[in-house]
Image (cartoon, rainbow, N blue to C red):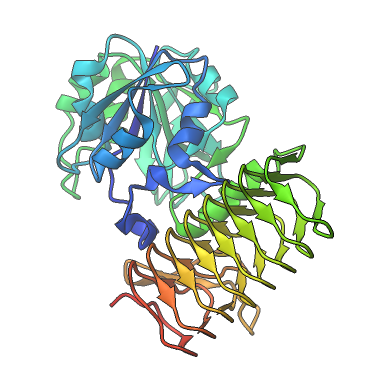
Length: 398
């Protein structure tokens, strides 16, 4: 059995993080999204075809030609012309039956396995308000009757999550699919055509489905995986009077200095230094080669490789990129005074995160002056800097 994972897109909704890497290489719980997806395929498929495009070399170099016993092949989508077009590019690689997965999302092993039992089918999720999604209309045996994107009239509650079971015959239908108003070949249009001639089933999700369309969704994904940690594993050095509670993973070469308090679930990578009297709170992941200074507090955050957070700083509900230097006294505001949901700018539009607490998104190679403070939901683009004592009230993108 083969699997196709669609990882070609630029992922503009996760800017500025994906200005310097493809989204599948973003870490959650110190493991990249694409590795999480591959983990759920172990024992189910022999070969994975990664449909690459944007910064494809980074994915190819990171994953290689084999992963945990699965052969890894690469197919390039040179132009972003829709999901149907993406699947069509893999035709020369496909032998017979194959599963297609959206590379933004992580699907549970049990659901992927269940989907593979159908000749043709899709995973679906029940939504009380399905109007913002692609929706399947099905009969009493879960056979597809219709598939409508963002329906204006109610046709059902079963929404599309971007996971499909096909065989090679789908390519003929994709080739006959008309170009959409967006100028793309939509796989949903191909599936609708397909379902008129062949029986196409839906299978309702029974396990987790972790969507990573926006930066703040990475934190929810991380929380899920960290909560699966049941035991601590300490491969580094924990000094006397440092205290670790709950499930805490500490990598080789890492030092936890005296007076530090770590409240799991937390994962800390290799060759890090957690300074004296730090407070590392639950659902935090600190990647390799990071330096966390004296008296720093970090909560529910992703800290990527080679980042320094200098003394007496606070980082909460935030995502910090690689090779970042946060000057002493850096402070994140992660909640609004009016107690409303935090808003964040995405492609020029303010988007409701759905979260009462959300901090900041800081891209790679950023440096902040000492005592920088930053409003909730704000972002800083790669390689930029703030001044000493600056209060960041809007995105820093130039």
